[in-house]
Length: 629
Image (cartoon, rainbow, N blue to C red; front, side):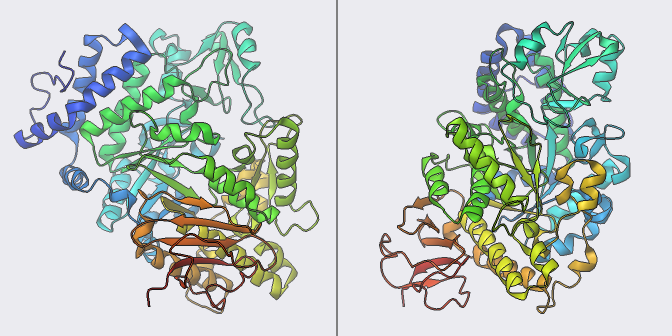
């Protein structure tokens, strides 16, 4: 078989024009052989010529089905491969039902997103879900069908087109580790279909699962302890890393890869420009390990990227890899073939909250300095909050057990408001004795002190909370990569305590219904909402016009002799120095900064803090540039 180009069978590309056939073969040069090498390393002789022929048929069919406007987009993006690295990339993440009811409702709110400056919209799971509890939609029962309460497949395609017309890229969740127990594959497995039984990991007794459990972490030790669930119809134990309703896929079966490749291309043809690979680190199981970050995971992602790129080169893969820094950069292909284009910078996110709680940036600076620079054609997705918890393991991975436990406890108690000096109103998540990872939940506003300040009617406390929020946004937007906002944080939405109690899941604190009445006051600068909206819009405007925030330019964390200061150098053609004070009191301006910041400087954010080299007020943030005037 030709290792360079796809051997499309006769007739497979009949509906495709000659120019598009040529484009497919051009894209396949290199990509096809990358996929072959990667999957040969995973599956060996099980991916034989007959299997590759099936993959070629699949690619041809999806290429023939790809809409004309997406072929145009592919060509445009091939001509501008750094499109996603531009400073104007601003992300926003939302639950469709919580934000606007359904997909048509989101389409009706595109003006709001555009006004905010959003150019990248991540819809949390929109596909048919497990009836009843569905882990927030991540128990997907059918990737080829939209959840009926949210709309139809046509509604999804229509929304994608509308977003594209407004310059907003659509990101969809592609749940790769598991399916719902109600998925048609799982239902066929229950009926005794051997083919679909092989799509999952089923054990006739507890012998093998018990050995695995000795090394496996527990994702939900309180609400879903253990990693295996007994299924009577199968007379065996099914691997269920997350919840019993989510059956882990058996990626050791190459037929699973083929099926999931088809799903990825179907989502791409629906208009998705980014696929968020949910729970990517868990794809491969190996006895005696945590069954995360295994070498085969990276080869699978490498092949997936190569094959999707043949049909839909405008589509990005984003790794949802909430793992420690030594593993994190691997998902971007550092030191080897490319895997994902994007990955979440969970170390930065958790580290920022750690710094805010402790008033010290020393550990955050050290963690960032230890992370190697990522490939220049990839980008971080940075964020402050999301639909899930803050995982403190991201900042404790290299500490000894007692020290890590102490820091996790300290941070969990602080953000639950259960320690002296805490300004936060959040909640600890899945805290169990001897748990290796503790987390915290809450919205940006509640964790940063706005909820407590408004409850107390303390005007000074409200001002301080707003400064904390501005500080966090200032670092987020100045870091580089693609900053991702979470629904409602731009208007100070606070915790939904009632919803979290009803759902018996602390993550629902930050999954409240979007308060459109509150958003309606965003243009009134006399309100807290209006002030938050104005400061965020101002920062986004500054970011868009700052060339050094291009994602290909690495962020350089600097050591400064001021415990509360975080200093991040953006060393591009027009260099920027992000300087942020996480201390609750003023900090002196650093005296030893590298050129060209060792001379006169200006503040792009110009917050009215006085001279650009004056002491930093509590929770102040500046974007410094050399004063050329």
